Image 1 (cartoon, helix red, strand yellow):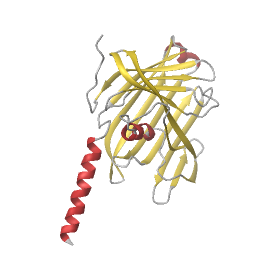
Image 2 (cartoon, one colour):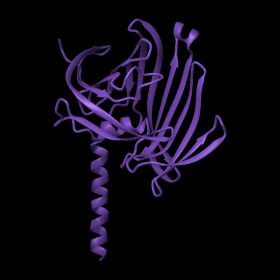
Image 3 (cartoon, one colour):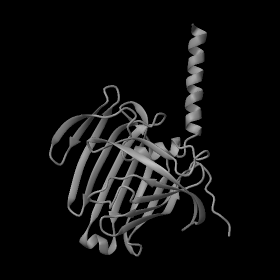
Image 4 (cartoon, helix red, strand yellow):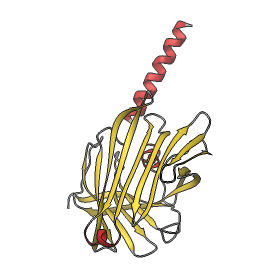
Length: 259
């Protein structure tokens, strides 16, 4: 019996080490993006940072996303957004999600705690001082953890053009079926040089912000980092583009194509 227990412990350790080695990111990874409106007007900047932290006794990744407007756009439509996600290092299950935004006067201040044992999301809407409890579907991701989940689990070595990957995303207080379609391979010109990319079409919620469900196009590096390099969005009014302009703390080598 003791030998069996030792074997199980060793197996768990090996699995954990393998999971860590296969990750596309690590603690200390940091991205900075430049955003432009209708391809010519500088609109703002955004950052994404990964931190190694503890939450309720669990070792987690804490990802912080900040976005803000600059220049002329900030004069007539100021935006200041904060998104945070705490998720499991092995399973990627989200434990806590924070959304605090101010987009031209449209504000939200929401904290969601995920109880995976009961599949209940405890939602604290701080703006209205209202607390609710909503059932979420098993293996659901929040808005931020979903991005890191895809980077770790999408097998880009066997991917086929037209292939779709879907999973449940829990956003605000609802479960959504999120889909990501692979459009093909591309090489784009970036601040760092020409980079081989994988091109995707994420599904989004059409309405106040996006023109239609297929309004987004995403380019990620065709390497083990699967880092976001460019995002284009057709909005209800105009279009938005985000380009990666700075990064640090990558887990894997980043290659630029030679001319």
